[in-house]
Image (tube, rainbow, N blue to C red; front, side):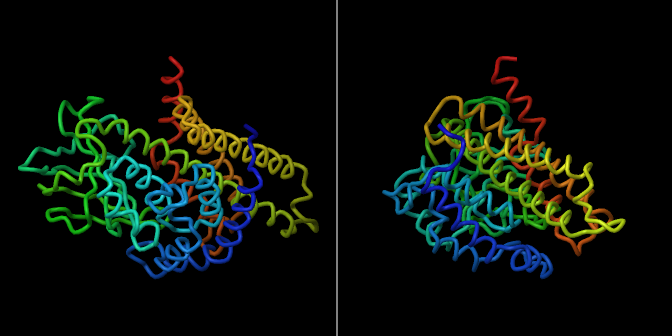
Length: 379
């Protein structure tokens, strides 16, 4: 497949770019909610507007009321979210949780998907239990209790955990902590008794929680997929999330690059535009090449995932690792080429660095995925 968008996808990109630039820009969203110390970290009105645009239900099957689109299309929206640093639950709700709910019962889908599609509901995903991403080890336990389960344990850095109407929780129902089997996913409603959230604001001003489950009682119909067979669902959800995070990272890299190039065309030093200095031109050209390569890698991963190819798993980690390196380069170059003012809050370029730092850690950093690429390649 060609590593660019077809005509319909290009039209979607134009629509998403205009909408996010107008309604999701830094001044209207990120700075607005940050400066007001918003406990959610995002605007529900914008989330509702995204639903009206059809974005929230892009990955939901048409039979369930969604648009039935693919990850290429979802990635188009995510790239514009990243470009504008738009605080939004799209990645956690419309990509990660929506992917998990594809494996849920009709009852679960009927309970949660209409709210997602309408922009009335926000979902979170609770997988990690330590500071670093390590999904191979799940210690949170769900023990049989009557006709349901009793959930005990804790999860770390649950993005939008306190704002979520439902949390997709990975728990162990059998076996040892490091076993591949014995994992079950649960849809835990926000009002579940004995669940508590310790909220924290991340470096990029987004909100997360350390969430504790102190004997949370769940009905049997809270299970997503099969009991003890949740590893496959978990892997599918994580793969979709990693590719989605990579798409958002391309947007962060592109947004920082565009801002830097614009600055090079405006800032004068020694009587001339700094963009006329050849050394800075070389750095800007190199950065452009890296961003384009990263975007092509992400599109390839999206296409493979939409096609159900076995190599999608490998390419998801290739994309996450490549984008982490590229976005890191873009924001560092941006701050450096802005000079001292790049370190001030007055200029937006520093906000891109903060978002990149948080996004790199989400669902595994460059080192995690480089190692995973090696293992999947037989090393």
